[in-house]
Amino acid sequence: MITSPGLELVFQTTSRYIPSIMTTLPFLSDIESIAPTPILVAPQPVLRAVAREVTPDDMALVKSHLPGMFSAMYKAPGIGLAAPQIGLGLRFALVDVADEGERHPMVLINPEIIEESEQLAAREEGCLSLPNQYAEVIRPLSVRMRYRTLEGAIEEIEADDLLATCLQHEIDHLDGILFVDHLSKLKRNMIMRRLAKEQKGR
Ligand code: NI
Image (cartoon, rainbow, N blue to C red; front, side, top):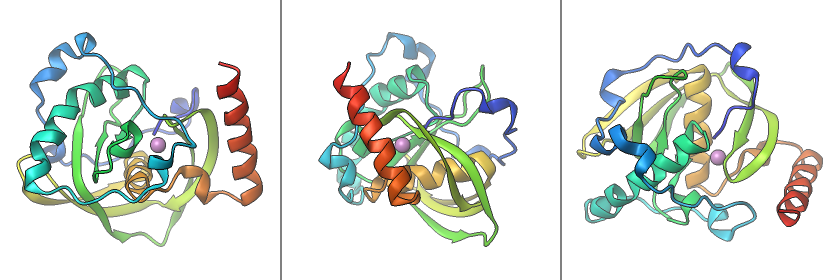
């Protein structure tokens, strides 16, 4: 996910961070030297597929992709990146919704929303797989998520505001859902047509 330009001033990040979710990743100290993994742009079929659960046997593969994925996410810059966006059909995603100049990297393995608020919130969303396209999406304001850490522990966090939006957006990716699927068919088609046109002109 990416936040649209200029919106940071309007939406203050008030998401609650649970320190344990922030991962220590040694390669981040030299992330600029790591080649970013190319990000797939819609309508790539893998973006529409349901990713499968990560098993202990997959962990080496997951870890091998983290440096390139973090590099791609920070370079974009984006605040979330899911494995299907690099063509990998596994249920994991990266998130970092920290303010500029700070880093709060999170790696979510097999994440699932286990509770969501009745209260909804509208927020402008963008996606690294739909470059330059933004639209207001309505989702639950806060969520409770269960996920596995890189060490294999099962944890839960509560999130609201920007982090809640981002978690829902990234988990959607694992189910082959893009933010435009939350819009009317008319708006969705308009965005997809505009994206196709822009990609052709590149
Ligand atoms: Ni996205």
